[in-house]
Length: 431
Image (cartoon, rainbow, N blue to C red; front, side, top):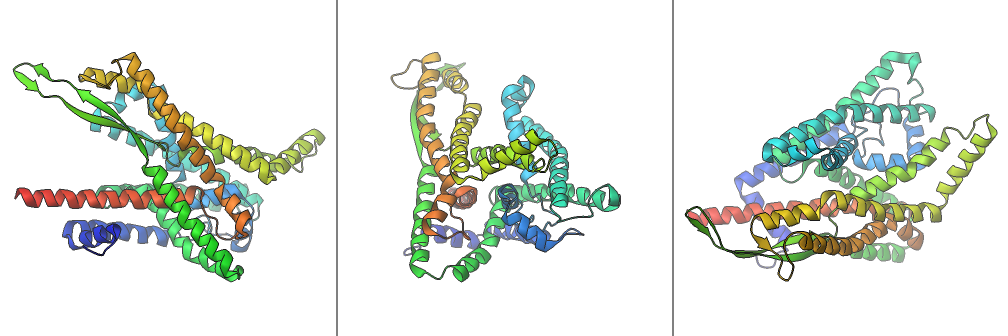
């Protein structure tokens, strides 16, 4: 492997292994099916009007990201996996607030399977509600003018198709996770982002004739990707010592390990939360900008104008992303539970007493590293607008949710491939 990049080396070794090659080919096959579905449009769609609406609506642009470009054509998978992601987020929060679900989540594989089933069930009403909301908005925007009570058959078929498309993508994602490589849902979003990249780059080259600006943009892109990888992989390792213990007639030797606390343990979820809540007031206000009630019309117009201001929008976007990073981290990492588990198995953090002092120490450490992670996510969230204004390149937005997903999927997939190759090496040594 001398002279090869580690990523290319791991990939070439994986293709030479029959079982890994089959997993990679299966994953690629499922992504081809997804891309085919993303090009199958729903009936009665005005494509020209749809393009205009998407260019002027940031919320729909975000939904288009999670649909892998399916919303740009209002295809059968226009909603993408966004309803499933929302259902997963809701179940994650409910696991920490409902005692029965919290107990179920601690019952190993059986509990995880039950929670996954609840998530799938919750996805159906989430997809239906989101399908109604998007379709009504598209109808009022002139994209699907026939949608509504006037053509009940078309309306029901569109809603049923949108809901079914989400469930189909959810199934494809689970198949990739089970029989392929990597996380299937993340791969579907990744495929949509990468699939649109060549067209976006071509549009940027056609519009921007200044090669120096494009070169600066490319260098900034490389620096941004390097920074994201550095922060995403950054972690604080808390050392844990285990004493020797006797159970029955057996003596278990002690040892040392560590608790890896990641700088950004929340991933891209705070950005999704922030932009969903940030864009909700302006979306609601747009429905009342032509109201006959003076105060309602004036308030709606003021709300739309305020959220159209770049300074206000990016400032609130940054603050909400930082706040939701702390909120989500507090839900997913509970210092008291970690401290109890360490004490139960006879462990301790050097210099810290077991029990409550350990929980307080972990809480302080998590708070400090979460500050760095929250500021990082906040900067990444507003980065597309900042870099676009700095370089003047508006057709290719650099940063934000898309680049986090792309980098995260590539890094995690390569880790899985390397782990599979390492496992095969050990098996060969044992034999």
